[in-house]
Image 1 (cartoon, rainbow, N blue to C red):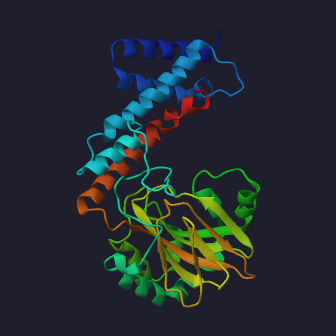
Image 2: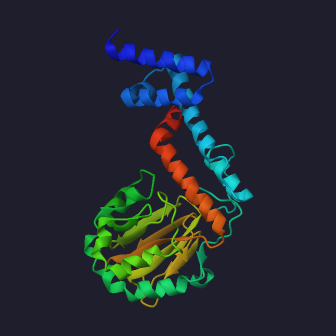
Image 3: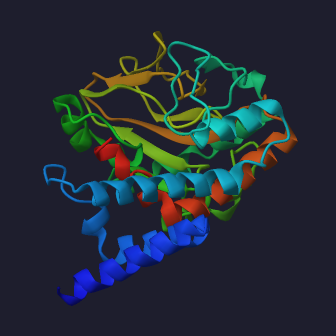
Length: 327
């Protein structure tokens, strides 16, 4: 038996002892150490035959990781809908969506009013923010030339289809704020413009949100239908460079861009797509806004939930999905 096998055997014996004592938190920490040192043991290739013992350890590690998430988050919630959302996030309850066209991939708050598109006037104070952002449009236009990141990689898992492959070459971006923190690109903006993103209207719940990003859709580019990750926020689009042919479609409702379009506000947890069939690029400023129907306490709940989830994910997130490939 080589040294690696001896070390793995020792860790597994330690886990067995801890589980026998019902010390599941410590057992999980040993699983995390095992995964860090010997990831191939708990994450083998899918075509590789698994022994019963090894399969059991993969299953146990994932279950203990998910248990840790529930233990960290289950007491969060000032309202019944937040408590239910936490249960769904932790896998204790199945997600049941309110609308056929709404299916956020990460966090879903039930009984939270929303619709595919909303008027700017539905969010108190948003009109003033839109006016100030629009007045500062030249500052954002000067940043477009730096929008060279691949935006497809920023929106989560997407199908491996030809449409998405083509889009990766035709959809670029530049983040001014990511996960609630300003990026180095934000330094290109004047201080008074950058300060606009400190508005309490933005969905401040790092590391989940907010994002502020300049999105550039090249000529003849098409974004296939997809879902956002949460319904706690609405998405504000401020036009920078638009044309009469480009459009945004949400849950079957299509809105065309034009020079007179002030802004578009929509819930990206609904299925949505976009296209720019024109011969010039379309560029918009994208900002995450709180769903205005959340209470102040619920926003605080979500901020706490995101902190706990982020801490858990850094430690045990990879373990929690190990068994998805085999079960």
